[in-house]
Image 1 (cartoon, rainbow, N blue to C red):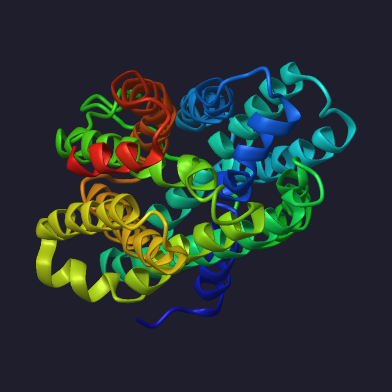
Image 2: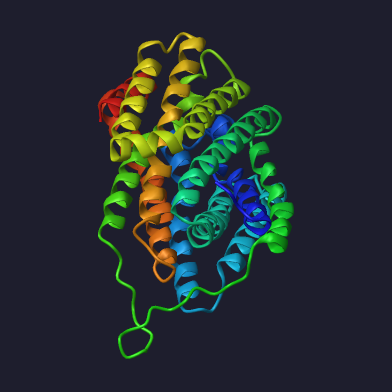
Length: 374
């Protein structure tokens, strides 16, 4: 893959943005502390659901941004820079307001606004500026960068959570320097409008395959989200928030390893790589369930489960990128990389935490076994 200087700089900017593509990982090590110490009158499901509002706000904002982009009112650069600015504001707001449970609502919504603006448009910039071969390679790099960022966020979030429950949120202050970098290096262009035969602007029709991969991404994220949102509770008897941070980092480490080889695996296995991803998350969850008393085995379980992310989501993203053009990329990106996975992430605790609590009580051992089976 050979790129000119401008494309290389753009690629590195996209990869740097990818480092903060999974901000929830900075927060997952503190979930047990938030529920038991900060707001002990709230249940685990309530805390998880409020924090999951990020996954509800994010697709709504991304849809609004896509509408403005498709109408030529703003550029993808403007949306991405604004999102990174909101990421910074989320950290700043948390420093000032963190004592009441309703503050958590606002914080989660602010984070949703941020991710809704910059996450999908980082993918969109890749769709628009690189050819198919480059996209397949960069998709793997991007996933490795996402998981590398997840490792850093998990470790630092876990350490900071031992000092204060909202410590992980302080990491979002990094949004400001990344926003400045994007402002300087990302090309500013408006998406072309779809034209009808008589030359008038018209609506672009999406390939049905976009929805196929979007549904898979949604169902996958409902399952994958169970790992991070329950790991601090699962390990509470054999570790602390820092231990949970290490586990989350290892989860992302699995993603880094899989992401490095994604390009070759995706080219060889094609859609069958999604089956391998499902097998990985099943094995990982079974290990978490069967060997819950062993810290080493828990670490192995989250590592294997983490590998699934770097096989499933980048493949869905890459396949969608081959089904769109410049007139449909903004809408397709929103559906496949924001609405679908965010909806899955939001529904994950709503469905699985409540369902498994009703069936098995508060046992995370049973929760991982049940969801692994699903």
